[in-house]
Length: 293
Length: 293
Image 1: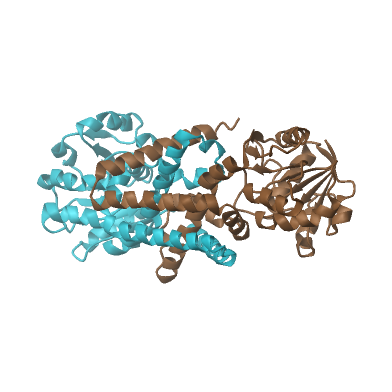
Image 2: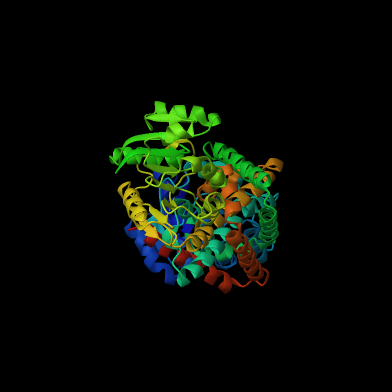
């Protein structure tokens, strides 16, 4: 599909895209572009055979590149667009893998005035609490959903070709608006991460005073897994989508307030109803999750 | 160790104790006692070979029984003690597997005046979102913690013998006060379950209006697993330990309020610090969890 794919930010996400693109024969060459301070990680990507070459120089990285995928934390998108602007090529396709889309589009607008028609914002919904290129997996996107959020000004050909690219690395591609994406992901991903970070932080402080983690069970292990996610990435995501996240935090506090009232009033049937509804809702989620096509 | 072990409430918890006790040769016979309405489940336990006999008649179940373990939801403890009282045998050892201990001790006190010295409250910290005897596993308690909460009036010989029993089915046994148990478990188990039920309930209502579960990822699957727990069991636990749980709900709301403030003020470093602390705390938990001895 492409002569040369350039990944900016060769960590878990970018490294897994590189591996999958190579495995599926979607490009002749894969290269990484990054900053000096990321050279050790990029060298590791080279040693592991995840990429064919690594660059810290933008001009050299862009020469001959016909597809660029930006895989850095969403807070650095504006800096990346600024860096790419002098070399922006109308013949090249651009996409990203950011977990928020409104902030990415805003960053593009801030740098280019209008969002370039050959940039197709995307979000592969896959990840893990691990990070770094060593954690990259060729099948990270297999049978996982990917959302593309083209604007009305986005080139239809670019959407088609990048959609094809994502599908061929195994994703089930959906298209929706930027706003819808950010609303849905705030609920299903950003809020749960905040709850996990908040809970584990709160219990961590208790544990420093009197050991409690020792008596936590497997349920807690699963519940808290996402609190092991990368703090920089999540600081960026939370700030980038705070307009959607803050109202959800408030809704959740109200939800907890209702449970507190049920407890105060010894309302057993109210608790039973709330817990049963949640159990059924999770069953519905599981049926959806097991079949992402 | 015992001639005849009687399990009251032969579901996941009781069934797993029965299987393990039998596998380890800790009793000649295992029987189940339950109500008429639970006969189908008890018959299933019989068919599966989990128990040797099932009873709905307390007198017959207790005849020849020298160890009784109560594995019903904690809300029914007082009714069970009332049912056992006429047949209470000073030579028999009694224990339970309830997730709250204060309420169990209170139920015993309400029925017997004083908590009988041959009753040793216990809580095996293991479980799963599945329930019922079909889900019972011989190794459910292997390498899992178990907390015994004897009172000052509890017979030391009973504590020793039951401690030995729990250890031989694979548990790592700790002894602590009833109050300490209920404080610790409210934080590491009861609050996380409430958060999971509350979140999945809230998202379930959103999903009914506009599909969102479709776009949830593996992180959400793990985070929400405990929301598939048994609603009756959790209604009972939450009410039984509400004195400990309610202040934790309030602390957690305050914790969320702090994150909300960091978002409102675009305080990136504050978010980074909070998330990093949580990530490190979880690492500490994982190191504890992997080595429960």
